[in-house]
Image (tube, rainbow, N blue to C red):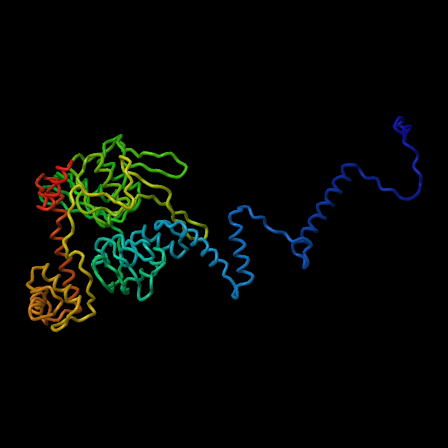
Length: 507
């Protein structure tokens, strides 16, 4: 061996023992590599598709916290007496994840529910027109939309919807309830409603309609007061509002009443953009606090400012973005806030679409007022508190029932209260349909150009509730108070004045 190495120039003579194939080193190496690769491929194919697998491949659990969930699913899948629906099972697990948050504003929506959710952001949708949320196992009305079937039927903020067409909503999410409440225009839905101050639940039948998502309504009142009602904060709300403001400014606008009563909220950035029309540049509009992020202040920027006296109208249906606007103007330019204490929603949500069309809507943080106050579950207390008249909360009367002389019921008492609020003489409010009430009903029917039968049902009942709603609009105590505050002529009612003086003395 050593000799051969020392004399490489002379190769040894080949022995003729058979035919020999000479292969270059590079070709040999490539041939070997391809052979190994082919063998590996055949082996993998056999392991994967063969009738008898040599090795059972198990997917490792990357998230240890989900191992219990996997175990539970495997146990059910193997031993439950029916076959599982994998898609339904997974959706149920995600639903449970959101339920565990105990957050009424976080929700998982499947593809169908997501479609309904996205319809709220379009130009219109079909339904009754009410913002709802899950509350204490039932569904609570945050606010009916202006001029919607829900408003015309007398639905109020904080009404609890117990049933829809006889189906209990206990334990339903808001998205699930929406699927039952909405429907094609022209169809009807019957809601069983529990109202604060009313002993028994009431049935409210509402005809669904197309709900246009027009978000700003304006009127220029005597004295140049621009009354601008904002019903929600949607994509076009800022542009709609600016259109009114520019028009009224040319017509001699002297002051502004921003009306966000029964406005359930909407986009935060739209509310802040509107606030920016009034808040001086450099001052806080709001502050936000999100997970793993430092607190951030959103400040007003330069640009067009409306430097006229401004008041804000709120009530218990004013939530979220409505409260952002009210608080911003209250704490920066000292704008008077008139009405009732607002709803109290101080959190922010985001909606993330999934590949299958479902949506995850969840709370991402909380917002604070310019001075750092959190109004969640407490609301904004108005600087001038003015309540609605008592008749504003009277329960709905179904046009399908017939009320006539000789009957005694809670519905009859409600009719007495309605007619009394409209100025009719009804006698004692005792729930008894007597001669005096019959005469009042006939008088109302004549004025409404209906046949004066003295029996209240059908069109007569509908006309009565419409007249009461019109009366409420005409006798808008909160709007009148806001105008008086702007003009410096507001006088508090005697009881309210006494309370204010007592508070001053205690200070």
